[in-house]
Length: 235
Image 1 (tube, one colour):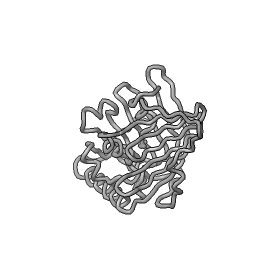
Image 2 (cartoon, helix red, strand yellow; image 1 turned 45 degrees about the vertical axis):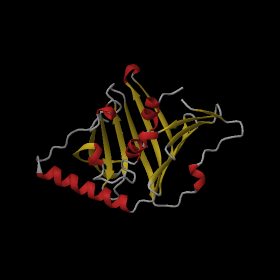
Image 3 (cartoon, helix red, strand yellow; image 1 turned 180 degrees about the horizontal axis):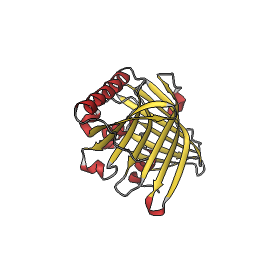
């Protein structure tokens, strides 16, 4: 059974990125002004955000065995009142569904017909702040939880992206991820790539494509397709 820590490592949206290289730009004013432009763009996107859906490739590298595991599928986000909901349908290598609603994280494994439920509880806001990084989250709101640096620009699969490095201010969160790199589409203000680094040397690269903003997503997407015999477990 996976622990909450391993769940974050495998599924965060954020629900969520090749080691960032510092951009060779003049210090002080230019990087600060460029960062402000990116944060303002993300603020504008967040103000009008209703939903996002995208195809993803999640690559999890484990240092101790020097191996990578790759998962592919589709991910969905939508704003429901003050809450952001997330659903992910993993198609490769094993079918799996992940759902975050009502402060609960549910992972459904059809192969064994089991749903594992994690209660985010008091950590809901912290988890949601990771979940919406680059997907409907405000740029300036990130400054409350992270020290943010501008790393220049880079082309990601044909998209001009601004690179941001996020270092969590909370020591507790740094125990899970000591830094995060976001690649933000400079036209739409959403994340096209993310990389999360762990103190252990493990890291996770997430690439997003076919991103659609503010389209109607059926309610059925945010419901697990279980059976009458599905087993429910809570760690």
